[in-house]
Length: 393
Image 1 (cartoon, helix red, strand yellow):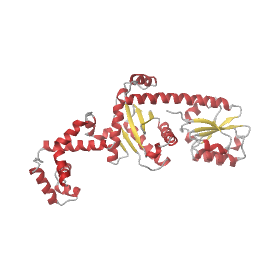
Image 2 (cartoon, helix red, strand yellow):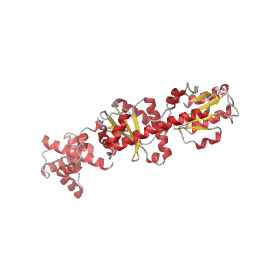
Image 3 (cartoon, one colour):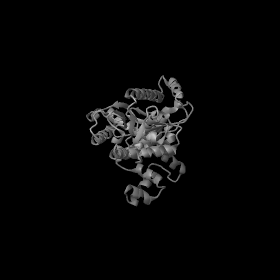
Image 4 (cartoon, one colour):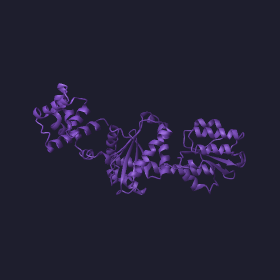
C-alpha cells in the first residue's frame, strides 16, 4: 500500500524538524511524489498526490501564499512544506492561511532554513521508490496467483515474505465503476489515490489491484462486517469526492489458501452481477444462498442440461405460441399456489390463472401438489436465473 503523508511525517519530523502548522485532518492523504515549486504558475504541471516543498523565493506577501495554497489544493496535491527563515517567516502564516488549510484538510508543514531541501527530497524519493517496489511486487504476485500461471509457487513464496501466509483467509472484492473513470491513467490514478487514502484512515489490510479494467480490493484476514462497513463508507466517499454514479461492489467467497484466490476472484463477479440484478450496491457471495451451490458446479453444461430437461418443452411452447405457462408456473411456486397473488403479479384475472394451471396439470402432466415436483421446478428456475445472470457478465 502506498505511503501516507502521516506515515512519512511521523517517521521524519524530528530528523527534519518539521512542524505541522495546519491541516492535520489530511495526514492520511497518499503521497505520490515530492515536487519543489517556487512559482505559483507551475501548478498546472501537477498531477495530484505530490508533496510540495518551497523556499518562498517568489513570496510577495500573505495574499500570494494564500493563492499559492489554493492552487495546490485545486490540483489535489497532498501537502506543502515551507522552508522558513529566509523568504518566508513563521509569522507570515496568517490565520486565514491556517483556516484555509484546515478547511480543506490540507497539511501545511514548516521546516527551518537550516534543513537542506536536497536531503529531505532525496530521502523521500527513496522511501517512495521502495514503497512502490513493495506494492508492485505484491500486486504482481497476487495477479499471478489469480491467473494461476507458471509463477504460482514463486508468487506465493514472495507474498509470504510480506507477511501474507499461504495458509490464511483472503477475500477478493470487485469495484465496478462507470467506464469513463478508467479511460485514462490520470483518472484511474486519482481514483486509486482516493481509495488508498480511505484505506489508510480505516487501517484495513487491503491491497488495491487493477486487473482487466476492474479495481480489485483483496483483503487478508478481514472481518466481513468491518469490510462491508468500509465498502459502504467507500461508496459514500466516492459519491462525495467524484460524483453520484452507478457504483457496484461484489464481495467474493472467502478462501483459506493463497492458491485458491482465483476462486474468490471468480465468485466476486457472480456476486457483483447478482447484486446489480437485485439493485444492491454491495452484494456478497454469502448472500447468494442456493446460487453458492451452483457456483461450485464447474461444468455449466450440466446446469444447462438440467434446465432443458425440466423447462425446455414449456419454454419452447411459450416461444412458439406466445403463451405464458412458464411464467405462471414460476409465480405459482413463488407464491405457494395463491391464485390471487399470482394474478396480481402477472396482471391477469383469476380465471386466466386457473385456466393456465389446468393446462399445466392436464397438458403438461404436472402434479403441482407433489413436493418433489415443486422442488424440481423451483431448482430448475433457480438454475436458469443463475445461468441467465452470469451470461450477462
